[in-house]
Length: 284
Image 1 (cartoon, rainbow, N blue to C red):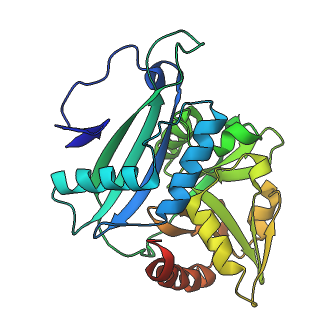
Image 2 (cartoon, helix red, strand yellow):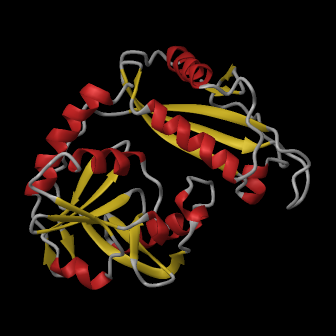
């Protein structure tokens, strides 16, 4: 079952038409949310990011679009799919209502909630090889719009196809200044010695929820120095570790980039701290 504007419909329903602005123009946003036993991880952060993104895109925010209302709709959808006691990936999509060409006829919105079961209630560290490569065919534009989770994800799609065709598990995206910005499906962190570095949002990386949580964790650890600064492709070869973060998988260590093989010691340490952080703060 899916939730469309509060109505529960079979997942096979045809409830959108050719006027959908998310389909026509990418005039839509989405949040990918991890839920375990009906506990929504980092719900306040997801909600605030969604509201801020809707304002940036000049969408009208309905009066009933409160944290409490959307949380209840998510849980209603979980219950309809008998997923209240499971680990679940939830996609909350918001699109501007149909009508108009580039200029919308209105700013009113509709929403869709989808669910998919996950393998584990915990963030797990995969032990299999994980190789990445730079995707250089197209680049992410630095600036505010690139930090939003909009439906304009064509670069991510093409990079995914490139990775599949060439035997890579993921690709790293670059901006117009040739700085490394992020992975296909998450933010990136480099480790060299005790310095942990991640690209700044000004370079065009997604304003990731897990990125924010990890920076919060690292700010309390005296053994590491954190830098938010541009990352050159040349730095990848010099890093001791490289890992990718997103809300669904947590921390995904990269094992290989070209001839470079990375360690995973700090990734493992941080994953344990992340799971503890989730138990303490994830549902707030």
